[in-house]
Amino acid sequence: MKHLIKQFTKRWFLSIFIIITFTIILGGCNSKNSVVPESMNIGEIPIETNVKQLIDEYMSNEKTADIKYKGKKLVFYGVVAEHVESYFPHGQYHEDPMPSNIKGPEDYEFMANSIIFKPRDPIYLYGVVPGSIVDVVGICQGLSDDTVIITDSWIKIVSGETGIVDY
Image (cartoon, rainbow, N blue to C red; front, side, top):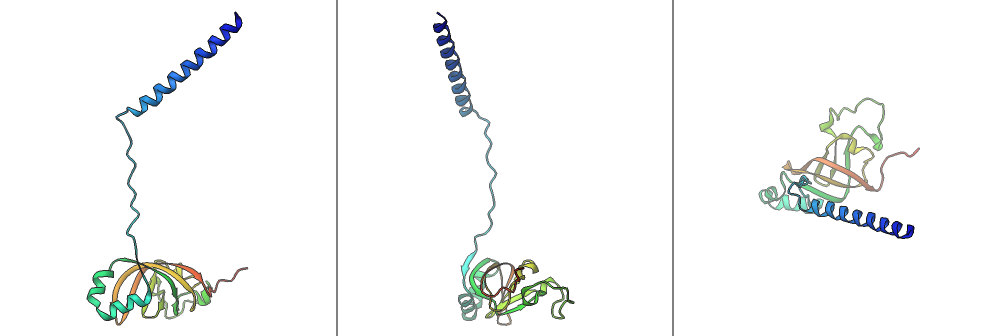
């Protein structure tokens, strides 16, 4: 008799558990109060281009190139830094006085062919020296004195000389 009571009690608790579980699951599905996830702005998708293509388009027809690129975010892969203006000689920070050609953050830049890349923050030029290969994402400002200006640039060193000393 005890065996039958134990078996009945186990089945009863299992049945109650299953009924409660299904009630919770089905009750949740019928709820009119749902939370809509917030939309996330991932920003503008950059236009992929390269140094030669951008210069060629600006030199052949500046107005058409402005319509296509000016004010838009561009991404460049494998850019070779030719001339670097920064407070990081040889790519490193130092305690010497600020070079005379650098008056503030707006003067930090590097050139590749006829494009000037101005970093979003001067620290992005840390480690960039002539010959460094970098990827860049920035905003095209158009042509100025036969030079295309790219501002607000994020710069990532890919390979080549970096000037960074590993201690």
